[in-house]
Image (cartoon, rainbow, N blue to C red; front, side, top):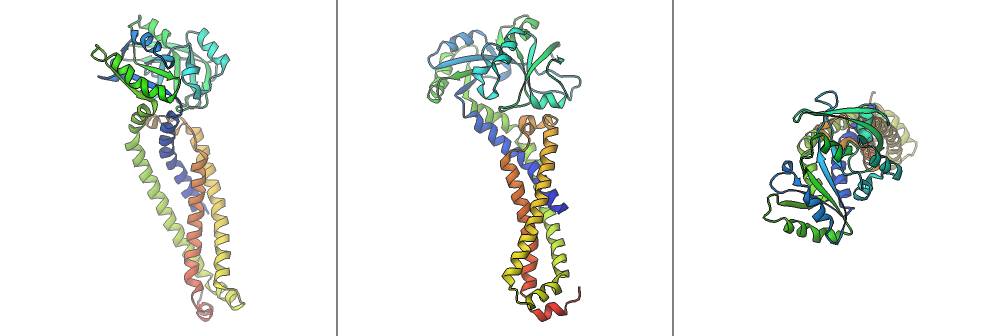
Length: 359
C-alpha cells in the first residue's frame, strides 16, 4: 500500500503543472479582455496618452494601465509578480479576482495599499495590515506598502498589486505605462477592437500589439513549458518504476498463496470468482493507499504555494479535483494490475499442481 500511496502522490503532484497551464489559458478566454503592449518590445512601454484614446472607443467598458515593478522582498530569491495598476476599476477589468466592494474602496483611499495573492501571502507568512517593503535594484527604488486584502481566486494567486500612481510619483511621472488592459463589452467587440487599436497607432513612435488575453497568457505560460516537461518526465518515470516494483511484489505474494488458491479451487470456486475476490481486495487496498497519497500531495502543495518562483503561478492553485481523481484512478489501476495479472497465471494451473507447490 505504501508503494501505491507514493505513486499516486507523485502522479498528482506532477500532473498539477500541465493542468494549471491549460486552466490558466482557458480561464483567460472567459472574459472579453485585451492586452495592449509595445509591438517592438514589451519593456519599452506605451505613452500614457494611449489610455484616453482607447477608453473612448465604442465597445470598451474599461481600461486599466499596468506598470511592471519587479520588486524584491528581503532577498533576491524572494521575488514575485508585482505590478502597479489604476485604482479606479480593478474589479471591472478583472472580475475573476472577486475583489469585494469594501476592498476596492480601501484600495482607492490608501495610496500605498496593496492587494496580495493568497499564495504569496502564505509564502512569507504575511497578514492583512502588515507593512511590506519591496526594492527594485535597477532604478533603484524602495516602496513600502500596507496589505489591504488578499486574492483567493483567479488566474494567478502569486500577484502583488498596488496603486500605479504611487509608483509614478516615486519615479517623478515618466509618462509611460508597461501595458494596457482593455475590458470589452463582448467577445465580438474584443475581436473587432484588436484590429482597431493596432490600426489607430500604426506608424506611430510606439506601435501597439493588441492580443486577446488567451493569446497573451499562452505566450506567458509557454515560458514555463521546458522546466515543466522535465519535472513531468521525472515524475512519470518514478510512477512507472514504482508500478513495476508493486507488480513484482504482488507476483511474489500470489506465488506464496498458490496452495491456498488451489484449495479454494478444489472446493468448487471458479477462476472468475477467485479473480474477482483478488480484484476487490487489491482494488480496495489501492484505493486506500491512493487516497492517502493524494491527500499528502494536496497538503504539501497547499503549503508550498508560491514557494517555487520558477513555476510562476502554476503551483499556486493546489491540486484541482480532476487531478485528484486521476491520481486515485492511477492508484486503483496499479493495484488491480498488480493483483489480477499474477492471479491469472496461478488460476490457470491445475489444482494438483497448486497443491504440490511448496510455499
